[in-house]
Image 1: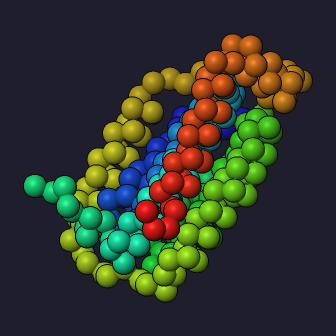
Image 2 (image 1 turned 120 degrees about the horizontal axis):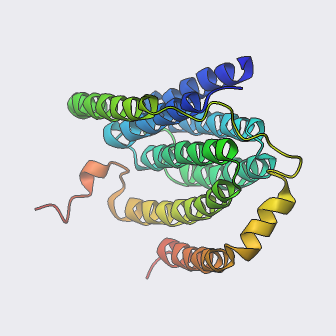
Length: 100
Length: 160
């Protein structure tokens, strides 16, 4: 059996990769994909703890995380589409109307 | 043992491809691969129901949505290569990854894991937990999904 720490380290690595994607990419769609990657890293942590502590709650929480992730992706992509209609661009640097 | 390390290596590789590929469609394909690998990891962790849901919801629904949006917008528009945020991104990743890894490797993990019974991770026990202890969050999740549908339709409607 693989120790719990290895699962946690793998999930930390995936989460850090997702953060890098959010920070360095200049394409809103890829930024959303990186957020999905981070959510999945957290799901992996939940499932690993649920397995190692022998409790079903982790799997139930993952179920809810998936529902929230689906809602987030739907609304995020709708916002991206409507922003693209106004600006003809997917670059987050262009969206700075609220920037001081 | 071998399965886990193979899956982990492939997962890190495909996650890196999600972030560092130039073409958006290639990023989406790498994300599908990563989601499949995570689903396999779920199955090896005695969570077959969640693994199936992962494939259905993520690879089946969310990724199709992503690909549709890529198709509707401009799939060939490559973003400009600007090295402005690379240093910041690397520093953030190293700090976060280092902190998380240090935190994780600090504590002693439970040495012998819970011995899984036949029922653990089965759809029955997941459903029992979901519809007794977590029935209120479950109903709230359905309202959330309804709001998301309405919001997406309103936002993406043309000409208002």
